[in-house]
Image 1 (cartoon, rainbow, N blue to C red):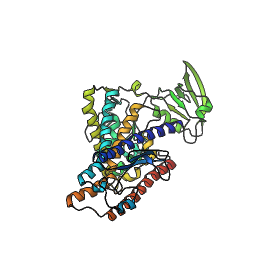
Image 2 (image 1 turned 60 degrees about the horizontal axis):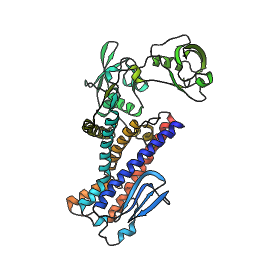
Image 3 (image 1 turned 120 degrees about the vertical axis):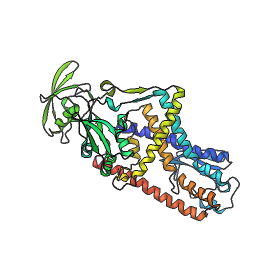
Image 4 (image 1 turned 90 degrees about the vertical axis):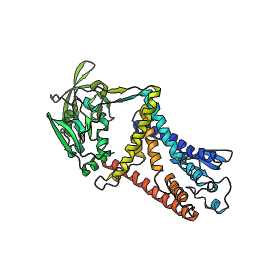
Length: 445
């Protein structure tokens, strides 16, 4: 429960910051061109708001429905669908009275703010914390391939060498590179031999739906990092910091061999030899029907693997942060290609609020929080640029058509387009969150 609350708090804070900045982008250009802004809201306020105050011509407030936010600009057909105001003659301070190029800048202001904010975050993160990662060559014990990894063709113990014969320095970027670049092969070292693992479109579909495919292989000498409440481990008296020695008299070289053995003992009672505060103790534990005893291991990559850390001075962090933001944008755009790949079935991996919240860590970490916020900022910018009426991209599409043709779209047409866009967006939100619910039911979330 505590984990869920931490993730939810991070998600709400991140979205609040990003929504306010996005709407401020619209607000800033509107005020620059002397266009009246009637409302500026964080979250939506159907029927009532949690807070509101009036300053000048603008009402500032906080709504109760945390699905985004909005600015209501005078003389504009938007989600408010204020048709009565649109029937009146245009006023000089209204959106519809402004030149097309000014209206275009007002509409792209939010997206522009999201992109720039992401770059600022990445610059700040690199300057404050630098960049730490696990080099692929330092995954010295090889990988652990889960069920999906094995179906693709990987084997536990493989050492990843290259992807399509290109070395990937960061181990955590191996699978994203395979998926985003539509790689055809992954070269691994297996039992001293170099082997090509062939990647098909159906393999991409499997990897897209899996939370992880490959993980670094850890040695067996691990500590207990925590105990699940009312689990067999808690009932048996296992404690945090206990170190596993043997199971039923058997010792193991790797942690995955231990978990595989425990999984094979479903419903049976096993004898654990542990070390606690320098003393050897023995505990008997009944393995659950799911093949678990209810603990999580205290893995510390830095203690087992040689991590690489890059530190940046202030001036160095600027181009590095911009490069990271540009690369993140490119990688996210590559994902759109997968939605048009029938075999990949990328639409099945589309997630809603639970998926977004789940990318945040279970403990509060400011470095991770700002990295995730920058990533979500880029996502919001790209999604808002989609040429769907009711999104900024839909308004931009009509404005560009007007600037090219010299003819303004009929306001009745814009009303119908706005309604159609809102229905489409609602359907996408429902579909994405339904995917989350299905994943939770299937236990794949």
